[in-house]
Length: 399
Image (cartoon, rainbow, N blue to C red):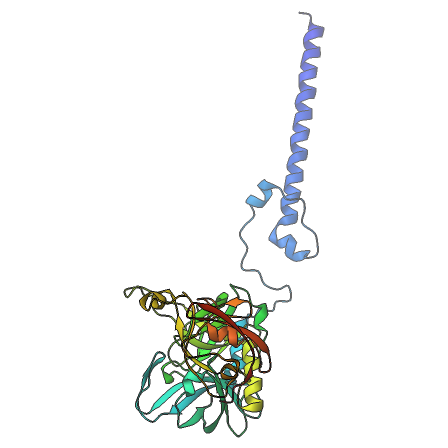
């Protein structure tokens, strides 16, 4: 190889090495400047300077800083405040209007709703007007000789019974004086299963203004009262309701009373079956209608047909070899009543009112009470081997 070619090759190598060295020096200078710009000293000196584009290498070698403080040097203060939930707000709104109802009885007695202690029984109630009208259950005041109310603040007031309605298990009491709170009735027709609700009352008479919460489990429930009729359109809830809660309010999260608690179911059909969370309330829309009539008239305008009866079901029909499976067996007819004037007799079996056939879902009293005094109805009865129809104008029940 000639000397000229060797010299040319060496020149190319030197130039390439020099270019590589210059590139390395330039890149190192960029990294050094980036690190310098992002160092704590430069950041403190230039707090408004935006950081350079982040580089994994540069960020990973930065030292860990002390806890961040405000640029002004002030320390950040964190204050603890009380968190008010929808439930607590609703309870604060309705709670002052919830009362304990004390019923003075002739003596101790036992009923399907529990056993009274000594000569008194207790339940719950809720104030619905500023002049002292109080809602409770009929079974809370039933058979009482006198009544008193314990307000949420512990004050004891004498109460007067204004009126009762056994069919809906509602009653209205009246007290005098300044009311600590007044509850508002809401619209129970808009309730849906799953909606949160609150029960307030005095379980066992001792634990005044106890609050429990749950949901609407179902609407439109029907329950056998054990007295020949169904309690219809009931609200079912899993909010804890105990003996003594009867007559207390069921409240929505808006702080409105959407039901009056009335009963609980503790067992199923089997003797060994135990259930929990089956409470029932009277819907506020029914409560509103009944309470208004009781406050105004002291009674409910129920229609009167004028018969005493015994409900018939398939078991009773088989036992007495009756010709029908369902109906109302007439045990007596009130003299001068609409039934008497129309020609209904003792031992007749009422099987239909207008176009509604009596059965387990349509008991006699429920069908009758769907009419008003003054209405004219057609009553179908089975008499011996005959089916007879009677057109009857209903009168108003006076007691």
